[in-house]
Length: 53
Ligand SMILES: [Zn+2]
Image (tube, rainbow, N blue to C red):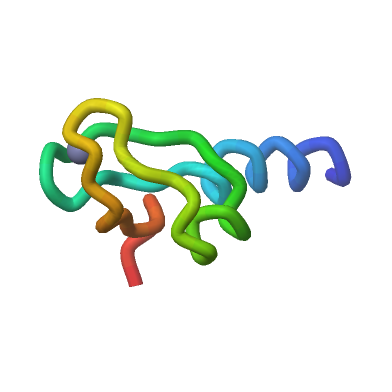
């Protein structure tokens, strides 16, 4: 169960979607919040977490 939990965190928590080109970006959420991550396809900084709501 612990392993599954870790996997779930890895799969969902660190994945963001670019709002502009809808590409998936894997990055630590901390860095995304700090604005250090930008989409590598369109250079946009508007990302949202993968999970809705
Ligand atoms: Zn993008």
